[in-house]
Amino acid sequence: MANFKNSINSFKKQLKNYFYNPAVFFTFLVLFISCTPVYNLDNGNSRRVYTGLERFIDDYAYKYKGKKAAVVTNQSGVDYNLKQNVSLLKEKNIEIPIVLAPEHGLYGYENEYSNENYIVDPELKVIIYNLHHLDLNALKHLLKVADFVIFDMQDMGMRCYTYVSTLKFLMDTLSGTGIDLIVFDRPNPLGFLDIKGPFLDDRFYSKNISSFPVTLLYNMTIGEAALYYKGEFRKNINLKVIPMQGYSRTMLYHETMLPWIPPSPNLPTYMSSIIYSGVVLLEGINISLGRGTPKPFEYIGAPWIEPRSFCRGLKNLNIENFNFRPVYFKPSFSKYQSEQCGGVHIIYTGGKFDPLEMSYKLISYIRNNYKEFEWETYHDSFNIDYLAGSDNFRKSITKSMPFEKMSDDIEEKSRKFRKKRNKYLIYRDAVFP
Image 1: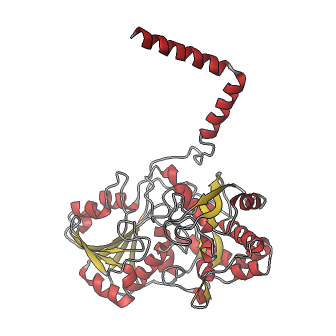
Image 2: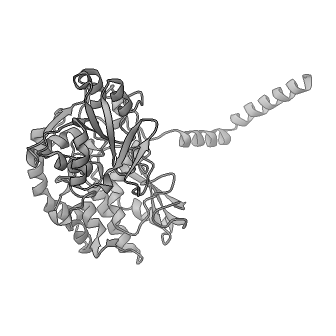
Image 3: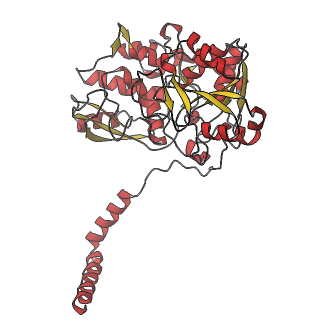
C-alpha cells in the first residue's frame, strides 16, 4: 500500500511540473478551447411554448368525447413529455379508428416510400394507412369513418418539405365534405429566415414536392399555412386551428424549450434542419448530401471531389454565417452508396442568411469547377425545377447570372404573396419589410 501511495504522489508531482511548462500549458489551453462549443444559437429568449396538441388536450378535448377522429401524424406528434398524440387523445375518450402516415411513416424511420398500403399497430390498436398510396377519392372514402380529422406534425416551413403538401392533399380531400379539420399548431423552425425563393410556378407542380402555392420559404406555421390555403383556395372547408401559447415569430426552435423530435430521418438535429434549408436544392445535382452518414445535409460531396481544394473554394465564396472543413465520407445508402466521397462538413455559425443565395452560390461553384457536374433528371425533366418550383433558378445559374439579378426577378411575386399571407398570421410580433 505504501508503494502505491508513493507512486501516486510521484505522478501528481510530475503532472504539476508538466503543466508549469509554458509551452505545454499553452498547448493544453488551445486543445481545451478547441473542444469547447464555439457557436451558440441561444439569444436568451427561451420560454416554454405549449403546442396546439397540448392546448387541445387541456382545453378542447372534452368537447369531442365519444367522437371518432382520423389522425394525420408521425413521430413528431408528441407533447412536451414525449407522449404520443394518439395515446393522449384516447385517454380523453376520443376514438381513433384510423391513423394516416406521411412520408417516412408513423415512426419516421422509412427512407423510402413503404410498399404497404396499411399496417395494423398492435400497441396503438389502430390501422395506419400510407398516404402516398392514396388518391383523393380513396382518402375521401376512408375519412367517412371519422367525425373529424386531426393534423399534427412538425413542419419545416419549406415548400419542398413534403408535409405541407400532405396538408394541402388533406384539405383538398375534405373540401365540401362537411367533416371538420383540426390543425394542432407547432413552431416553424425556419421562420427566422422570413420569406425566400420563387413562388410556385404551376408548370412544376408535383403532388409531394411542389404543390402548396407559396414561396420556397413561406414563414408561416403549419396552422397559419392551413388558414392561408383555406382563405385563398379552399373556402368550403370546416377548419379550426389550435394555436400555440407563448410562441413568437422571432423564436428559434430551441428557445421554445420543446424537445427536437427529428421530423424526418435525415434531420436529426435543429442544426441539420437549418443547414438543410441552404443545401436542399443540391438534391437537383449529382452531389451527395450526406444521406446515409452521421451528418445528413451537413456533409456534401462526391467521389470526384478532392476535399481540401473544395473546402478552400467554398470558403472563398464568403457565405455569411457558414464555415467549412474538408471531410471524407461513405454513404450507407442514397447517392454514391458505399463509395468514398470527398467533400466538406458545413458548419452554421448562427445568424440570418438567405438559403436561396447559399444554394445558388454552391451549385454555381460546383458547376464552374468540376467537369463531372450534372443536373439530375427524371423523365426528361430537371429535378431542381420541381424542388425550386421554378426553372428560373437553374436557367440563371446556366447563364452565370449574378444572384442579385435572379433574386430581383422573383421579388414581385414574393411581395404579392406576403401581402396575402399577412391576413392569416396568428403570431404577429415580428416586423419584416
